[in-house]
Image 1 (spheres, helix red, strand yellow):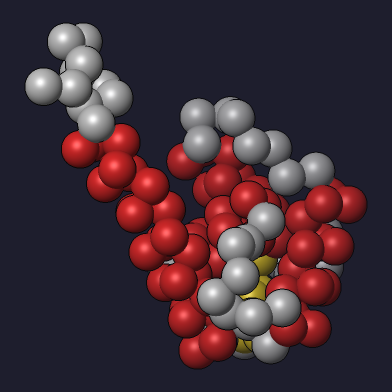
Image 2: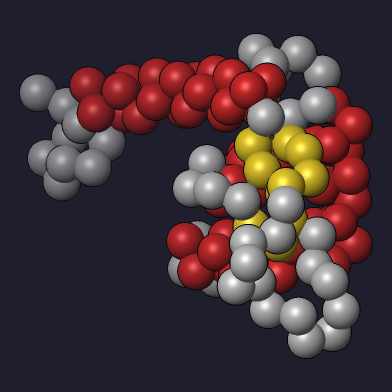
Length: 115
């Protein structure tokens, strides 16, 4: 997949979560759920399938676990954003920002509508 192609919504949210620094799967899931006010729940099959796909694309990579990483339930795999993933995230953000700009120009959120 090209870094300029529109991203799947779950890929965008995962890359956005990792833009803040390395996270393990459960932390990614929790951040996305919180940031989207519960509108996007990454079920385990979706989350780990997406992580696998993003890793195959070279957009994320395994990162060393921080020294203070929780160890309950075994060792957690941490993921970090690769430069190619940051480029894909930036391209998608520009695409979405363009749509938001059009909506602003058309006063979509104004009760009065366009001037």
